[in-house]
Length: 198
Length: 301
Image 1 (tube, each protein chain N blue to C red):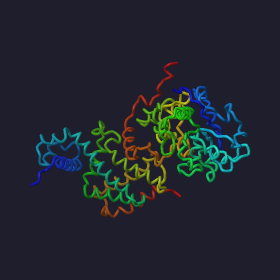
Image 2: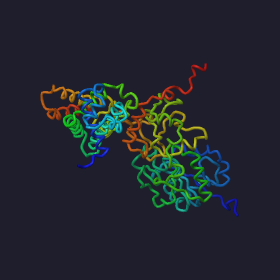
Image 3: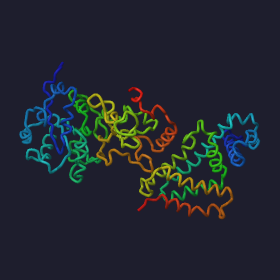
Image 4: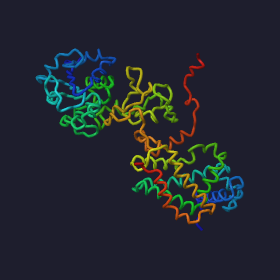
């Protein structure tokens, strides 16, 4: 059997913790729960993360880097802004389907338990890779004349609030159709709301 | 050993299409008197000179240094002679040709008025296709609107002392134009923590985010070689207009061009992604000291 590297072990903890936190909530989930799910001792867990709060911050940075990396690839492609919107929506919904714990953690733990993140994860610190790529997406869109120039947060809230809301409905099993069926109409709505006004 | 040069360098200050700003700026040089002992103006539009302009345009004499001020306009005459003819005559034998000011360097404001015909003498904005290409090797651009008197004084002294002047790609002395105007600005602490200036002319705040300041994108030493030895635009609370660059004048000098609240231009050499990352994090923190007046006059009265 191949030896499991420390990095792989750490990623295993991250995956397990994301699932437990997003399913059961941040406060109910304990370090022994996480250690048990990964199959390691509690003592060994502390070799990777020294506290639950530090793990919580690492998780949001992990998600932000994951989303940021994917949006960066879209930003650096030759696609036009309308196509980039479709790709970002598609990537976000695919993430919600394939790794629902990532989006769930973002919505249910990070946004809902601000007290956990108030020290060392304030403002943009832990979500910087993700927000930075969205800034670059919007800035490029306006610079190329495809998007209407407006306040960044007005546009950001419209885009990501919409996606977050849809994924929440999906998670609650309220959506009557599969999530993929909404990709096109939502992309069109976002583009129509943000595009240059003539 | 020669302490004094046997012959003073002869300088002809010729004007193209100009507001006289550079000629006036030069008069503010601290050590102008001292410099004038080492050079001789065969003609200068404002200073006592050996020859009048009418005599100079006969093109019967020569100079060691030709200083050209103002934009090149092929239809412009001085004392009834085409400036083009005068320029080419004196350029031929001059050891150095100095384009003073942004108009002579790149076209500047007087190119903006007639973009199809006017240009700098070597450059037409960023394109190197001005009329004096054959003299490329001896042209020094001292851009600025106007040129800083010390930049011209420095360059003349370098020539007098026979030092090599290392130029950048736009023929500007690197010694003067390698750093950005941002370097040495007293507002750098506000730039670091992304605290905006509320208004012009205040001690506090950075003018980059809303007030149009081009200092992080502009090459020049305005904040290390101060104007009149005391001040600079940004120190006094006015945005840098980017006047040393080939794209000067830009529109809306008092407003920062933004796209979705994000500055359209990042500081020179800084990738936008890196800049936005740092900005977002810096803005997260509120530094109380920088968000208040430095001097609270209310408590002192």
